[in-house]
Structure formats: structure tokens, C-alpha cells
Image (cartoon, rainbow, N blue to C red; front, side, top):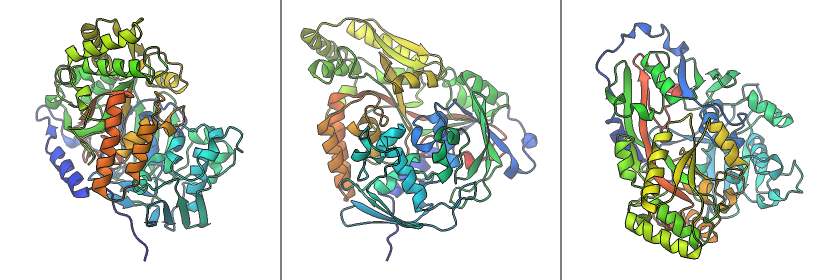
Length: 551
């Protein structure tokens, strides 16, 4: 008998939380437009939404930012997916069967799935894509996602052949893929929802960059056009076989370099959906005329990274003292109240309230609490090791609503620690990401993480594991802690949910001492849509489910 996988977290708890969140939605009651502007056939309407210009071509395993990620998740479909209530759906996978210790999984592929060029989606479509992503020769930004699979370390040898494969992948036939892991990982079936595990057609490998500019997927939509720095338009894929029902004709992802402009367009009826309200409107958007407002608990982590390569911030006693001092110098609640009008949730750990492992009571959580006297004491201790010199800067992208909070954080650090602290503005998100990616940025920098699947592991592995450092993933500060790595591995070997949760929280306690990033808050959903727009829902990533939207 083949075992169909089920979610490895309490779905009922997640669904109840989502249902409670929906009750927070508020609708503007004044000055509404009639539905006269609605499309005669809602199923043919193109929905316009905000976006940023993708940093890279649209290759799933080479994208680790939202500008590209928003589009990719609608062009491709993986083995599994999660709906707005946190329920797992088998998509291309017919079944996923673990062995006794969750170190090997047999994946059976459904028949009939095709890429939009007509090529069949087979076991090799996944195996080849994963091996390509893992191979160091291809420098994929999400390469470390494959580090759990046997043979990954061998593919990190700079002398490896560019067509070398992961030894842990065995394609039995077109419909059967056996995956052998480096160690037990009970969360692996959940991780398969991540975009880095999406399949690729064979044509992708002829010229991966050219493919990324005109991607061919198997998702609910297919690419129609990409006008660089202006918009990306996708249209309904009539041959899509998955669970994500498409209720419109397509999505136009419009590029904005200023969120205030996007908000003005929604107010004027020129943009259908804005997924993040700018800071200038957080106090008024719930009662704004001519829009529908949405406010509910969310999962997107926000903070800033202080790279260990910076002077005074190494992975040593001085660096740890200074990180803890800076963290304690920040009055998160005050900023959430004053700058964001309570549209954020103050961080108490490295995850969010929308994962079952979230906690407010971990050992070391005091490092995230405002304590100016202790901050001064720790900073003085660090000065005894090596006197402070220079300025402290936090880099951010000006095309997002970050200036106000960065200035507020910098002022609090300056006033508490008596040092010069300030923001460091970059014109666009792509500009700052390029500097972060090539490790030329010489300051602290803003960081954010949109949840890929509902598990604490999705925050911990890609952002803080050693395998994700040095450009192999999203560990942009290159934090490397053997202690944390071992604790994370031990947690993922637990097949008992309660034991796994406890072990993941223990790993977080190590992070709370080391502070490889400074957690600030989690973004709540704070979004608006034009009033003729219907069926706007938000999933565990804080993103609207664009496929359900009509007008």
C-alpha cells in the first residue's frame, strides 16, 4: 500500500488561526464605486498587482527574492502545495512514501502533467532540475536547498563536471523517483513545496539565462510578456492539472519603484491589488475611500543582518556582545506603534506566529527586548576587548517603505549606545541585493523572509545553516555555527512532532545568543484592493492568492 503524505504540522490549528485572522479584515464603507467597472466575463479579466523588478531571470532555483518569486510560483507547480488554510495538496506527486527513519522517500509522479511547450513532466524533470541546482558550477542562489540530498557535498567541488548529478536521486522510470537523504529529515515532504524543487523542461539546460527570460513551466499560468522594469504578464494555462483553480484570465505584475505610487494607483482605480501598504498610509488605509482594506496576522520576517566579516562583528565574544547590545537598544514595540500603526507583530523568536513552533518564551528571548541599560553595559564590555571606531549603518532599498523604520532604529541605537548610526539608502531592491549577493556590501543591511511552507525549518535552514552560507543559499551574513547545524539536524531527524518542535526551539536558543540577524518584527497582512475586485485571500506567505481574484 502506498502511503500518501499528510502535513507534518497541526492543520486544524493553522486553519483555525487563518479563520480568526480573516475576521480582522475591514472594508471601507464610504465612497465606494459601483460594480459597473467589473468585467463582463470575470474569467477573462487580467488582474493587475504590484511587484518589483526581479533580480535575476525567472529560474526557480536561482531566485531568492520576492520580485521573481511572486511570478515563479504561478508559472510552475511542484510535487506538493499548500492552500490558504495550511492544508497540503499533492500536485504532480501521486504519493510520497518515507522509509522507517525518513532518510529515503519514494515519489510516484502523476501521469498527464505537461510543460507549456508540450513536454511531459516526469521523474527526470525533477531529478535533473535538483541536480542542476545543486551543482556548484551553475551558481544557483538556492543551491543549499539541495544540501539535504545525498551527493550534494560532492557537487560542491569546484572541479566537478558541470553535468554531474546528485547520487541520492534514482529515476526508476518516468513516474518513480527515489530520493536518498544525507540524514533523516521528517520535514522533507513539506520542503518540497518550495520553488527550488520545481521541475524544469529539458530545453532549460541549453541556455539557462535565456530560459529564465522566457520560462516554460507547468503551473496555472504561462508567460505572455516581460517588459523589463515595467511589467510581467502571465495568462491562464488551459492545460494545468493542479488544485489551484484559476478564476481570471491572467495577472499583470507591475513594477513599482515607489510604494506610494502603487497605493495612489489603487485609490484611483488604476491598480487592482497592492499586497503591502506603504508606511505613509498605515494609519489611514483601513478607512480609506474607494478601496477594500485587509489586515490580518502574517508570517513575513523582517530584521537586519550584521555580516561577521565587518570589523567588531566577528563570530567571537566582541561580536556577540555588540550584536546583543544593538538588539537591546531597539524599542521594537514603540516603532511598531508609531511608525507602523500596529501593522506588525514584534519578534520574539526567529520565526512567526503562523508556524506551530513559534514561541514567546525561549531562553535568550530577552536579547530581543528593549533594555537600554543592559545594552550600554554590553557595549562597554565589548569596548574593553576592542574600542569601537567608525559608524554603524543599515542599508535598505528606497523603492520599499523602509526609510522610516530604518531611521527610527538607527536613532534608537545612536541615542542608547552613543555612536553614530544611520540608514544607507540604495535606489532599488535589485541594487542592494546585488551588493549582498556578491558580498561587496560593507554595512549591516535590511533582511526579510517570506515563508515558503508552514514550518519553522523554512526560516532556520535557508537563513542560518552553514550549508546556506558563502553564496549557496540565503545565509547572507555567512553565519556558521557547528552547534546550531547539529541542533537543526537533530531536530529534523525527529519524526515525533512534539519532539521535533522542542528540538527546533532549542536550535533557536542558540540563534538568540549569537544573533546572526537582528529580528525586529513580522509583517501582518496590510493590503488593499480596488472595490470592484473580489475573492482576495491571503496564504501563509502573506501573499494574495492571485489565481482566485476576479473583477
